[in-house]
Length: 433
Image (cartoon, rainbow, N blue to C red; front, side, top):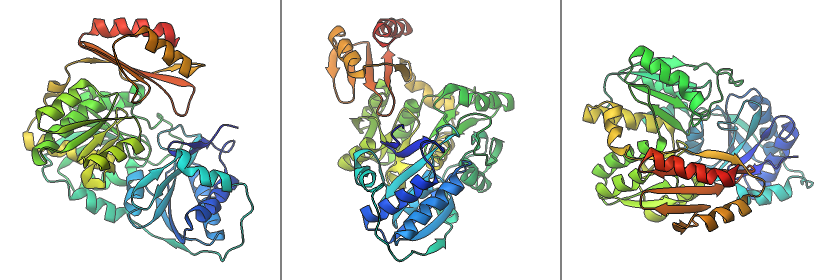
């Protein structure tokens, strides 16, 4: 059976790889590991999530922990709840509907996975001592979360926006936020449907953003936003229906954040365009490059006291939101910038679109280590091993790195010209086919 313990918690196909029996045992093992007396539990809207959440809560209670049942929540809401205690969220984030899992957020917004969960992995199939059954209490935190987000809505202009929830958790928060703002909204796929019948709730895949982009053009809207399933990511679309890469949006966020907080650090993952580093430096900030992944970004932000962080996948980490992700905060920040400047999104981002960027390309490779070693031998530019292999040239760069969860090698290329980018891609394909 596939390994379900991953870098971002538990994830697998239901019911073959994750099921109610596994979730109940996970709950018991978590209580033993953390010596927990109280655990918050929430879930997304996947078809399997209610029964898996019940099994998880049963395991927690049978091992002696009280359970605070949050019901339907988004990942940013889980982070908010974790200010008061440990949170287990039943979700598979942006994965297909057949998957499910658990996001483990320890007290203090600490999302954990990988080796950190090894104690749970070791405990999960061992016998558990009997304990006095814990209590089950229901609690709603939606209004508290919305009030926190709306505090940041200071310069929102009158705009027509097209919003795509992908039938995920944006349906819980976004309509309520919009009601409090001077926006005219066109909603796409905002009914809760954990089968995700229209598209997988992953806006990093261009096909999944197509409907939102087309609707922006059809409605002559000012802005489009496509959210992922659990609301920790968003992709933005300008008034022409052009999907703006997440690293370019990070450059925009950094430019305006540094006007208010000069000389502060901004963290970006190493797949980002050179335009991001240039924008940070041009506005007096400190650019900090990071390995890919939530834990790496968050740790770098804490280490450097950063005001902002971001990843190519559409995660944006805001100092004002505990230094973690919220697609709601990202949405509000874009609105604020448009309101303060009076400019459309296209004009705001065009100065950063200086290079030709491939986006992240995935290749199925049998021997990831050997493949990357062969590329390192062949390409003799300035090399770095921060995360996989990065090779820098005066007019281009590329990064090739192994996936942590799949037999894939991921490739990103950027160049000053489209011809140079295509040349590098064709040359690299000889090793990645």
